Image 1 (spheres, one colour):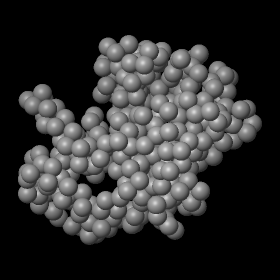
Image 2 (tube, helix red, strand yellow):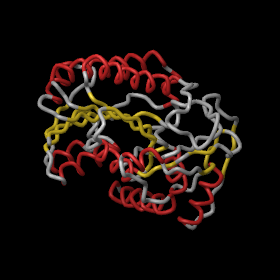
Image 3 (spheres, rainbow, N blue to C red):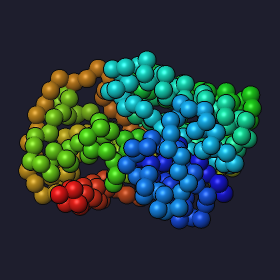
Length: 311
C-alpha cells in the first residue's frame, strides 16, 4: 500500500514510518526541513517532502496516490496552545481543513488522526474514560483537537473520506523531544540525568495515563486495516499513575535519589485522566504491551546513549 505520513520526521512519526517501510509499504512523509529524523527516514527508504503543512503544494505532493494518510502534525502542545490560541487555530485547524480538501480531491481512502485523550474530555465525570464520555475540553489544545475530529466526521458525511481518530494518552518513549515541553517523563529523566531537582506543578497528585510509542505505533498500524469506515479509539495504558508515583518508579528503575520542588498548580491541568481502552482492544485487536517500568528503563537507556553520542 501507499501511505503518507504527515510529521514523519518526528517522535511518533519516525517510528511509524520505519514500521511501515519494514512491512514493505511505499511511504512519503511531509515534515519541516529541520525535523530531527528526516535523514534517518530517507535512509530507510521513505520519500521525503521537506515543507510546510500549511502549503497546499506540499500537501498535494505528499498525498498524491496515497491510500491512507496519517496526520501526526501538531504545531503546539497544551501550554503553548493556551499561551497563543490564535496560532494554535491558524496552524493546526486551518492546516487540517486544507488537508481534507486536498484529500478529497486526491481520493484518499482514509485519514488517521492522532487526537488527545488527555485533553478532549476535560474534567472527567467518571474514570476510566470511555469514548462516549462528554467532550468538554478546558484548554485551547483540546478544543482544536476536538474540532479537527468534527471536521473529519464532516468530510466523511459529505464526501465519504474515511477516518480513524486515535485519542492518545500521554505518549513517551525513545526519540521524544526532551527540551520542547512534550512530556513529563523525558523532562523528569533529563533532570535526573543532570542531578537537578524535579519541578512539579501542584502537589504531585495529578494522575495521568502513560503509553509507550511502540504501543501507539501498533495502534496506528492496526487502524489502517480497520474494516469500518469511521472509528474513534482511546489509546493508552488503561491505568493511571500520579506524578509522585512516577517519581517512585523512576527511583526504582534508575536507582538514584531524586530531589523534588513543588509549585502552584496550573488551571488547565485536569486532576485525573485514565482512558478506558476496551473499545480499541475489541475493534482493533490491540492492547499495550510495554509496562511503565520497562518503558521508562528503555527511554532512560536511550537518553544516556544519546548523551554520550553528543559528547
